[in-house]
Amino acid sequence: MSEEDLIKIDQPQKLSFEECPEVSEEIEKRCKIEQCLLESEGHIEIDVLRELARSDYGLVTDDLRRTLWPALVGVDVTSLVPAPKLCDFETHPEYNQVVLDVNRSLKRFPPGIPYEQRIALQDQLTVLIMRVICKYPDLRYYQGYHDVAVTFLLVVGEEVAFAVMDILSTNHFSECMQETMDATQKRLLFIWPIVNFENSELFSFLQHSGVGTMFALPWYLTWFGHSLNSYKAVVRLYDYFLASPIYSPLFVTAAIILYRADDIFQEDCDMASIHLFLSKLPENLPIEQLLKKSSHLYDKYSMAMIKDEVERLEREDQERRKLDEKLALERRKKLARNAKSNSSYTLSHWIPQLLTPKSFIVTTAFSIFVGFCAYYYKNQYMAAGIS
Image (cartoon, rainbow, N blue to C red; front, side, top):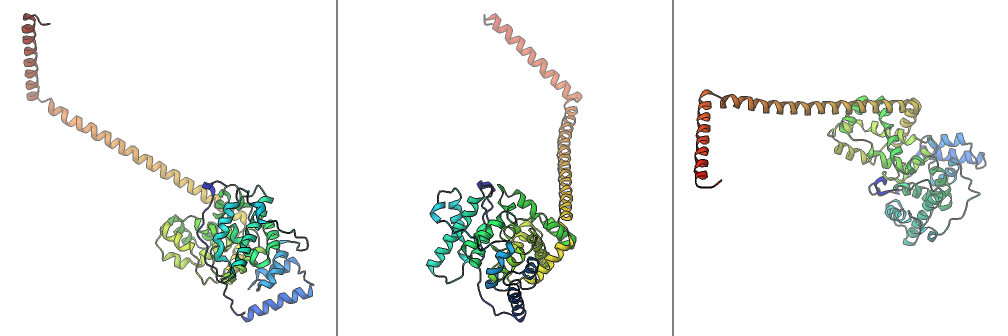
Protein backbone atom coordinates (compact mmCIF):
# COMPACT_ATOMS: atom_id res chain seq x y z
CA MET A 1 0.00 0.00 0.00
CA SER A 2 1.45 3.37 -0.99
CA GLU A 3 2.13 6.04 1.61
CA GLU A 4 -0.66 8.25 0.31
CA ASP A 5 -3.15 5.41 0.70
CA LEU A 6 -1.97 4.41 4.19
CA ILE A 7 -4.46 5.54 6.78
CA LYS A 8 -2.74 6.88 9.86
CA ILE A 9 -4.62 6.49 13.11
CA ASP A 10 -3.68 7.89 16.48
CA GLN A 11 -2.03 6.01 19.29
CA PRO A 12 -4.43 3.49 20.82
CA GLN A 13 -6.15 4.12 24.13
CA LYS A 14 -4.49 2.52 27.12
CA LEU A 15 -6.47 -0.61 27.79
CA SER A 16 -7.78 -1.25 31.29
CA PHE A 17 -7.81 -4.91 32.33
CA GLU A 18 -9.44 -4.20 35.66
CA GLU A 19 -11.51 -7.18 36.73
CA CYS A 20 -14.94 -6.40 38.09
CA PRO A 21 -16.97 -8.87 40.15
CA GLU A 22 -19.68 -10.56 38.11
CA VAL A 23 -23.13 -9.11 38.63
CA SER A 24 -25.99 -11.56 39.19
CA GLU A 25 -27.10 -11.31 35.54
CA GLU A 26 -23.59 -12.22 34.35
CA ILE A 27 -23.44 -15.19 36.70
CA GLU A 28 -26.81 -16.35 35.41
CA LYS A 29 -25.70 -15.97 31.80
CA ARG A 30 -22.41 -17.79 32.41
CA CYS A 31 -24.21 -20.69 34.07
CA LYS A 32 -26.63 -20.84 31.14
CA ILE A 33 -23.77 -21.11 28.64
CA GLU A 34 -21.97 -23.72 30.72
CA GLN A 35 -25.18 -25.74 30.88
CA CYS A 36 -25.57 -25.51 27.09
CA LEU A 37 -21.99 -26.73 26.63
CA LEU A 38 -22.60 -29.61 29.01
CA GLU A 39 -25.84 -30.69 27.34
CA SER A 40 -24.41 -30.40 23.82
CA GLU A 41 -21.11 -32.06 24.77
CA GLY A 42 -19.22 -28.91 23.78
CA HIS A 43 -20.94 -28.35 20.43
CA ILE A 44 -23.67 -25.72 20.75
CA GLU A 45 -25.83 -25.25 17.66
CA ILE A 46 -24.59 -22.22 15.74
CA ASP A 47 -27.91 -20.33 15.88
CA VAL A 48 -28.12 -20.85 19.64
CA LEU A 49 -24.47 -19.83 20.04
CA ARG A 50 -24.98 -16.64 18.03
CA GLU A 51 -27.95 -15.69 20.17
CA LEU A 52 -25.92 -16.28 23.32
CA ALA A 53 -23.09 -14.10 21.99
CA ARG A 54 -25.40 -11.28 20.91
CA SER A 55 -27.70 -11.16 23.93
CA ASP A 56 -26.94 -9.35 27.18
CA TYR A 57 -23.38 -9.82 28.56
CA GLY A 58 -22.33 -11.92 25.59
CA LEU A 59 -20.10 -14.88 26.39
CA VAL A 60 -19.22 -13.35 29.79
CA THR A 61 -15.70 -14.75 30.38
CA ASP A 62 -12.53 -15.33 28.39
CA ASP A 63 -12.57 -18.98 29.41
CA LEU A 64 -15.85 -19.39 27.53
CA ARG A 65 -14.63 -17.21 24.65
CA ARG A 66 -11.56 -19.40 24.27
CA THR A 67 -13.91 -22.27 23.47
CA LEU A 68 -16.72 -20.46 21.66
CA TRP A 69 -15.05 -17.77 19.53
CA PRO A 70 -13.49 -20.36 17.19
CA ALA A 71 -16.90 -22.05 16.89
CA LEU A 72 -18.56 -18.74 16.00
CA VAL A 73 -16.04 -18.13 13.22
CA GLY A 74 -16.01 -21.71 11.97
CA VAL A 75 -12.47 -22.64 12.99
CA ASP A 76 -11.65 -26.34 13.37
CA VAL A 77 -9.32 -26.34 16.37
CA THR A 78 -8.33 -29.96 15.71
CA SER A 79 -6.51 -29.14 12.47
CA LEU A 80 -4.30 -26.16 13.34
CA VAL A 81 -0.93 -25.63 11.69
CA PRO A 82 2.10 -24.76 13.86
CA ALA A 83 3.29 -21.17 13.50
CA PRO A 84 6.46 -20.41 11.48
CA LYS A 85 9.40 -18.54 12.97
CA LEU A 86 9.62 -14.76 13.02
CA CYS A 87 12.82 -14.76 10.96
CA ASP A 88 10.92 -16.35 8.05
CA PHE A 89 9.19 -13.02 7.38
CA GLU A 90 11.99 -10.49 7.79
CA THR A 91 12.46 -9.94 4.04
CA HIS A 92 8.77 -9.29 3.37
CA PRO A 93 8.14 -5.67 2.20
CA GLU A 94 5.47 -5.08 4.88
CA TYR A 95 7.45 -6.63 7.73
CA ASN A 96 8.95 -3.39 9.08
CA GLN A 97 5.59 -1.59 9.12
CA VAL A 98 3.99 -4.49 10.97
CA VAL A 99 6.79 -4.51 13.56
CA LEU A 100 6.40 -0.75 14.08
CA ASP A 101 2.67 -1.12 14.68
CA VAL A 102 3.11 -4.11 16.97
CA ASN A 103 5.57 -2.09 19.04
CA ARG A 104 2.89 0.61 19.31
CA SER A 105 0.42 -1.92 20.70
CA LEU A 106 2.00 -2.19 24.15
CA LYS A 107 -0.97 -0.36 25.65
CA ARG A 108 -3.17 -3.28 24.58
CA PHE A 109 -1.28 -5.84 26.69
CA PRO A 110 -2.14 -6.56 30.31
CA PRO A 111 -0.23 -4.28 32.74
CA GLY A 112 2.58 -5.77 34.77
CA ILE A 113 3.18 -8.53 32.26
CA PRO A 114 6.78 -9.86 32.56
CA TYR A 115 9.20 -8.47 29.96
CA GLU A 116 9.98 -11.87 28.46
CA GLN A 117 6.28 -12.70 28.11
CA ARG A 118 5.55 -9.32 26.51
CA ILE A 119 8.34 -9.79 23.95
CA ALA A 120 7.06 -13.29 23.19
CA LEU A 121 3.52 -11.95 22.66
CA GLN A 122 4.81 -9.20 20.37
CA ASP A 123 6.69 -11.75 18.27
CA GLN A 124 3.61 -13.98 18.13
CA LEU A 125 1.49 -11.03 17.04
CA THR A 126 3.96 -10.13 14.28
CA VAL A 127 4.04 -13.72 13.03
CA LEU A 128 0.24 -13.98 13.15
CA ILE A 129 -0.20 -10.88 10.98
CA MET A 130 2.57 -11.82 8.55
CA ARG A 131 1.08 -15.29 8.04
CA VAL A 132 -2.19 -13.77 6.88
CA ILE A 133 -0.46 -11.25 4.60
CA CYS A 134 1.71 -13.94 3.02
CA LYS A 135 -1.20 -16.32 2.55
CA TYR A 136 -3.30 -13.69 0.76
CA PRO A 137 -1.03 -11.53 -1.46
CA ASP A 138 -4.04 -9.61 -2.77
CA LEU A 139 -4.90 -8.37 0.72
CA ARG A 140 -3.06 -5.37 2.14
CA TYR A 141 -2.14 -4.83 5.75
CA TYR A 142 -3.56 -1.65 7.26
CA GLN A 143 -2.79 0.20 10.47
CA GLY A 144 -5.30 -1.00 13.02
CA TYR A 145 -5.31 -4.60 11.83
CA HIS A 146 -2.91 -5.38 14.68
CA ASP A 147 -5.48 -4.07 17.20
CA VAL A 148 -7.88 -6.77 16.05
CA ALA A 149 -5.23 -9.48 15.94
CA VAL A 150 -3.92 -8.73 19.44
CA THR A 151 -7.40 -9.16 20.93
CA PHE A 152 -7.73 -12.65 19.50
CA LEU A 153 -4.13 -13.46 20.46
CA LEU A 154 -4.79 -12.57 24.10
CA VAL A 155 -8.02 -14.58 24.28
CA VAL A 156 -7.46 -17.72 22.21
CA GLY A 157 -3.70 -17.98 21.74
CA GLU A 158 -1.40 -17.80 18.73
CA GLU A 159 -2.50 -20.69 16.52
CA VAL A 160 -6.25 -20.27 16.99
CA ALA A 161 -5.89 -16.50 16.60
CA PHE A 162 -4.26 -17.00 13.21
CA ALA A 163 -7.06 -19.34 12.12
CA VAL A 164 -9.65 -16.78 13.22
CA MET A 165 -7.88 -13.87 11.47
CA ASP A 166 -7.44 -16.01 8.39
CA ILE A 167 -11.22 -16.31 8.03
CA LEU A 168 -12.13 -12.77 9.13
CA SER A 169 -9.62 -11.25 6.71
CA THR A 170 -11.41 -12.81 3.76
CA ASN A 171 -14.89 -11.67 4.76
CA HIS A 172 -15.41 -9.15 7.58
CA PHE A 173 -12.21 -7.20 6.91
CA SER A 174 -11.64 -7.92 3.23
CA GLU A 175 -13.02 -4.53 2.18
CA CYS A 176 -10.58 -2.81 4.52
CA MET A 177 -7.66 -4.77 3.07
CA GLN A 178 -7.92 -3.52 -0.50
CA GLU A 179 -5.21 -1.58 -2.33
CA THR A 180 -6.76 1.70 -1.17
CA MET A 181 -9.22 2.72 1.52
CA ASP A 182 -11.73 4.04 -1.02
CA ALA A 183 -14.22 1.20 -0.49
CA THR A 184 -13.97 1.47 3.29
CA GLN A 185 -14.46 5.22 3.30
CA LYS A 186 -17.46 4.86 1.01
CA ARG A 187 -18.88 2.17 3.29
CA LEU A 188 -18.65 4.52 6.26
CA LEU A 189 -21.12 6.82 4.49
CA PHE A 190 -23.75 4.20 5.35
CA ILE A 191 -23.91 5.54 8.91
CA TRP A 192 -25.53 8.80 7.74
CA PRO A 193 -28.82 7.40 6.39
CA ILE A 194 -29.30 5.52 9.66
CA VAL A 195 -28.73 8.69 11.66
CA ASN A 196 -30.95 10.67 9.28
CA PHE A 197 -33.81 8.16 9.50
CA GLU A 198 -33.69 8.24 13.29
CA ASN A 199 -32.85 11.90 13.99
CA SER A 200 -32.98 14.24 10.99
CA GLU A 201 -32.11 17.28 13.12
CA LEU A 202 -28.91 15.62 14.32
CA PHE A 203 -28.06 14.55 10.78
CA SER A 204 -28.48 18.12 9.48
CA PHE A 205 -26.31 19.47 12.30
CA LEU A 206 -23.52 17.00 11.58
CA GLN A 207 -23.68 17.56 7.82
CA HIS A 208 -23.58 21.31 8.30
CA SER A 209 -20.48 20.93 10.48
CA GLY A 210 -18.70 19.12 7.63
CA VAL A 211 -17.36 16.50 10.05
CA GLY A 212 -17.27 13.66 7.50
CA THR A 213 -16.62 10.09 8.67
CA MET A 214 -12.89 10.00 9.53
CA PHE A 215 -13.68 10.00 13.26
CA ALA A 216 -15.30 6.58 12.82
CA LEU A 217 -12.57 5.02 10.69
CA PRO A 218 -10.57 3.54 13.61
CA TRP A 219 -13.81 2.16 15.08
CA TYR A 220 -14.66 0.33 11.87
CA LEU A 221 -11.12 -0.87 11.11
CA THR A 222 -10.57 -2.33 14.57
CA TRP A 223 -14.06 -3.21 15.80
CA PHE A 224 -13.55 -0.41 18.35
CA GLY A 225 -10.52 -2.28 19.75
CA HIS A 226 -8.31 0.74 19.09
CA SER A 227 -10.57 3.35 20.65
CA LEU A 228 -12.12 1.84 23.79
CA ASN A 229 -10.15 1.84 27.02
CA SER A 230 -11.91 -1.11 28.65
CA TYR A 231 -10.80 -4.63 27.76
CA LYS A 232 -14.13 -5.94 29.03
CA ALA A 233 -16.01 -3.64 26.62
CA VAL A 234 -13.76 -4.66 23.70
CA VAL A 235 -14.25 -8.40 24.09
CA ARG A 236 -17.99 -7.89 24.66
CA LEU A 237 -18.20 -6.09 21.31
CA TYR A 238 -16.19 -8.89 19.69
CA ASP A 239 -18.77 -11.39 21.00
CA TYR A 240 -21.44 -9.36 19.25
CA PHE A 241 -19.58 -8.82 15.96
CA LEU A 242 -18.52 -12.44 15.60
CA ALA A 243 -22.17 -13.47 15.92
CA SER A 244 -23.59 -10.70 13.69
CA PRO A 245 -23.68 -9.79 9.99
CA ILE A 246 -20.53 -8.26 8.50
CA TYR A 247 -21.67 -4.64 8.54
CA SER A 248 -22.90 -4.60 12.14
CA PRO A 249 -20.09 -2.20 13.21
CA LEU A 250 -21.78 0.48 11.06
CA PHE A 251 -24.99 0.12 13.06
CA VAL A 252 -23.12 0.23 16.37
CA THR A 253 -21.43 3.41 15.15
CA ALA A 254 -24.80 4.95 14.29
CA ALA A 255 -26.19 3.87 17.67
CA ILE A 256 -23.31 5.63 19.46
CA ILE A 257 -23.82 8.85 17.49
CA LEU A 258 -27.56 8.81 18.20
CA TYR A 259 -26.93 8.11 21.89
CA ARG A 260 -24.64 11.15 22.12
CA ALA A 261 -27.03 13.51 20.28
CA ASP A 262 -27.72 15.85 23.21
CA ASP A 263 -24.00 16.32 23.88
CA ILE A 264 -23.25 16.82 20.19
CA PHE A 265 -25.72 19.72 20.02
CA GLN A 266 -23.76 21.44 22.81
CA GLU A 267 -20.65 21.60 20.61
CA ASP A 268 -19.78 24.30 18.08
CA CYS A 269 -21.08 23.34 14.67
CA ASP A 270 -17.73 23.15 12.92
CA MET A 271 -15.63 20.29 11.63
CA ALA A 272 -12.76 20.52 14.14
CA SER A 273 -14.99 20.67 17.23
CA ILE A 274 -17.31 17.85 16.18
CA HIS A 275 -14.50 15.59 14.95
CA LEU A 276 -12.61 16.02 18.22
CA PHE A 277 -15.76 15.36 20.26
CA LEU A 278 -16.85 12.26 18.35
CA SER A 279 -13.44 10.66 17.96
CA LYS A 280 -12.99 10.27 21.74
CA LEU A 281 -15.36 7.68 23.13
CA PRO A 282 -16.49 8.21 26.72
CA GLU A 283 -15.57 5.64 29.34
CA ASN A 284 -19.10 4.99 30.52
CA LEU A 285 -20.78 3.95 27.28
CA PRO A 286 -23.79 1.70 28.01
CA ILE A 287 -22.57 -1.15 25.84
CA GLU A 288 -25.56 -3.45 26.27
CA GLN A 289 -28.01 -0.63 25.51
CA LEU A 290 -26.05 0.33 22.40
CA LEU A 291 -25.92 -3.24 21.13
CA LYS A 292 -29.68 -3.61 21.55
CA LYS A 293 -30.14 -0.35 19.64
CA SER A 294 -27.78 -1.58 16.95
CA SER A 295 -29.73 -4.81 16.50
CA HIS A 296 -32.97 -2.84 16.34
CA LEU A 297 -31.54 -0.55 13.66
CA TYR A 298 -30.26 -3.49 11.65
CA ASP A 299 -33.68 -5.12 11.67
CA LYS A 300 -35.37 -1.82 10.83
CA TYR A 301 -33.25 -0.66 7.88
CA SER A 302 -32.01 -3.01 5.18
CA MET A 303 -28.60 -2.51 3.57
CA ALA A 304 -30.35 -2.02 0.21
CA MET A 305 -32.47 0.76 1.68
CA ILE A 306 -29.41 2.42 3.19
CA LYS A 307 -27.46 2.10 -0.07
CA ASP A 308 -30.27 3.83 -1.99
CA GLU A 309 -30.31 6.64 0.56
CA VAL A 310 -26.52 7.05 0.32
CA GLU A 311 -26.83 7.39 -3.45
CA ARG A 312 -29.62 9.95 -3.04
CA LEU A 313 -27.55 11.98 -0.58
CA GLU A 314 -24.57 11.84 -2.93
CA ARG A 315 -26.71 13.10 -5.83
CA GLU A 316 -28.01 15.95 -3.70
CA ASP A 317 -24.46 16.80 -2.68
CA GLN A 318 -23.31 16.80 -6.32
CA GLU A 319 -26.22 19.01 -7.34
CA ARG A 320 -25.46 21.37 -4.46
CA ARG A 321 -21.81 21.55 -5.51
CA LYS A 322 -22.77 22.26 -9.13
CA LEU A 323 -25.15 25.00 -7.99
CA ASP A 324 -22.44 26.52 -5.79
CA GLU A 325 -20.00 26.45 -8.71
CA LYS A 326 -22.60 28.05 -11.01
CA LEU A 327 -23.32 30.81 -8.49
CA ALA A 328 -19.60 31.42 -7.98
CA LEU A 329 -19.08 31.67 -11.77
CA GLU A 330 -21.96 34.12 -12.08
CA ARG A 331 -20.49 36.24 -9.28
CA ARG A 332 -17.12 36.32 -11.05
CA LYS A 333 -18.77 37.34 -14.33
CA LYS A 334 -20.73 40.06 -12.57
CA LEU A 335 -17.58 41.43 -10.97
CA ALA A 336 -15.84 41.41 -14.35
CA ARG A 337 -18.78 43.25 -15.96
CA ASN A 338 -18.77 45.80 -13.18
CA ALA A 339 -15.05 46.36 -13.56
CA LYS A 340 -15.42 46.82 -17.33
CA SER A 341 -18.37 49.16 -16.83
CA ASN A 342 -16.39 51.26 -14.35
CA SER A 343 -13.50 51.48 -16.81
CA SER A 344 -15.81 52.61 -19.64
CA TYR A 345 -17.43 55.13 -17.32
CA THR A 346 -14.05 56.65 -16.49
CA LEU A 347 -13.15 57.18 -20.15
CA SER A 348 -16.60 58.50 -21.07
CA HIS A 349 -16.43 60.82 -18.07
CA TRP A 350 -13.07 62.39 -18.87
CA ILE A 351 -13.01 62.52 -22.68
CA PRO A 352 -15.87 65.07 -22.98
CA GLN A 353 -14.10 67.25 -20.45
CA LEU A 354 -10.93 67.12 -22.54
CA LEU A 355 -12.87 68.15 -25.67
CA THR A 356 -14.47 71.40 -24.42
CA PRO A 357 -14.19 74.47 -26.82
CA LYS A 358 -11.59 76.10 -24.60
CA SER A 359 -9.40 73.04 -24.35
CA PHE A 360 -9.76 72.46 -28.10
CA ILE A 361 -8.53 76.03 -28.92
CA VAL A 362 -5.56 75.72 -26.54
CA THR A 363 -4.58 72.33 -27.91
CA THR A 364 -4.84 73.50 -31.52
CA ALA A 365 -2.75 76.62 -30.87
CA PHE A 366 -0.09 74.58 -29.11
CA SER A 367 0.06 72.12 -32.01
CA ILE A 368 0.48 74.99 -34.56
CA PHE A 369 3.25 76.50 -32.43
CA VAL A 370 5.12 73.19 -32.20
CA GLY A 371 4.77 72.67 -35.96
CA PHE A 372 6.07 76.19 -36.71
CA CYS A 373 9.10 75.66 -34.49
CA ALA A 374 9.89 72.36 -36.15
CA TYR A 375 9.67 73.92 -39.61
CA TYR A 376 11.86 76.90 -38.61
CA TYR A 377 14.65 74.79 -37.07
CA LYS A 378 14.63 72.38 -39.98
CA ASN A 379 15.28 75.28 -42.44
CA GLN A 380 18.04 76.57 -40.19
CA TYR A 381 19.80 73.15 -40.13
CA MET A 382 19.47 72.78 -43.92
CA ALA A 383 20.96 76.24 -44.40
CA ALA A 384 23.91 75.20 -42.28
CA GLY A 385 24.38 72.00 -44.34
CA ILE A 386 23.00 69.61 -41.76
CA SER A 387 20.42 67.12 -42.99
